[in-house]
Image 1 (cartoon, helix red, strand yellow):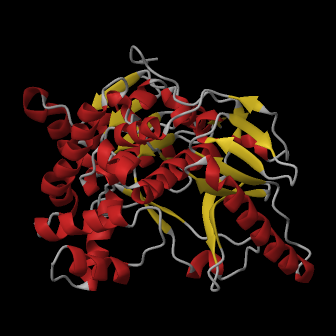
Image 2 (spheres, rainbow, N blue to C red; image 1 turned 180 degrees about the vertical axis):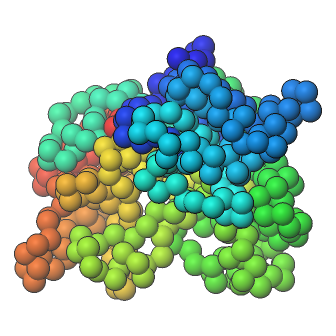
Image 3 (cartoon, one colour; image 1 turned 120 degrees about the horizontal axis):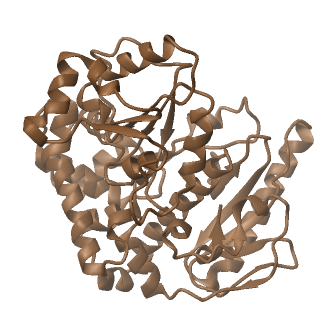
Length: 430
């Protein structure tokens, strides 16, 4: 394998290895700089870098003349940044069609190109993985004494951990889960996230869309997304927020267009709505929560320093919630599950809902401080009662496997007398 020196194991490694056994090719996509190439090299025996500038981008130029040039090498063969030559996708799909052998190719992509020039979706031949930045457990900032998967067994051992201060939690959000910034101080990592956004605004958006967008309006939208991170904000609300705070004149259709481009760049991700009844309209009619690919990007978009966040804990509370839901999404994926949120027409809501493939599900309230654990526990019990009433009408629905409050500060993970589990985020793993 071509595993890089100092490589840190990622939860996605097991998912990649598993899919290579089942499919002819696996595509790992996600925000640039999240570690896609290194995780792919950890599985690969050969590689073609399409974005390599050597000899005037010779690899890319050759692949544009004949995409099969990019496919040459021992299996699994990695084609890095395949979207640089979209025709490579069809070449891989065709090569996989010609032989039943599994695990032949790995592809990485930091943006999703338009379907122009790509004739086939790759369904059944090419599996796709959406990769995120690193969780606190992967970066070494969580002790991992409490298992996410173990929560579904309905109990956790009382466990003491080293408590994180609010200042430390802020530093983790400012730094984010980018592999390359581990070990950097807060100022250096803050500058990195800011420059990342500038690169997206000034270069990547045009590269993906082929259109020169209004940079001021695009910047205003990113600021608005940061002000509304970890909320179910609609496009219309974003539009009103931009007009109020940024003084820009922009059409709602343009907002949707910009959001689509940011999604193509994996700069944002959505946490969909949940209801235990598979046929419920709440799954499709309720707005998703919006998040940046990494909490550090929300901080950078706000232009917030650690000191500013410490003075404004209400704002930091939303950034912290996004950090927790980012990690919960990774842990859920590692268990082949999904992460949702819940909100009904009466305003009842739950911060996060995790569901496993076997249908079991559990609910989370997220609180920055231990002083708000009681508030979170009471809300969880109240919502659980609402679900219990619905289950009386539909016996096919499963009750939640657990109720849990995820907190920032606090040095003990435990189960309360009422059955609600309390888990510091710095104790959690997959």
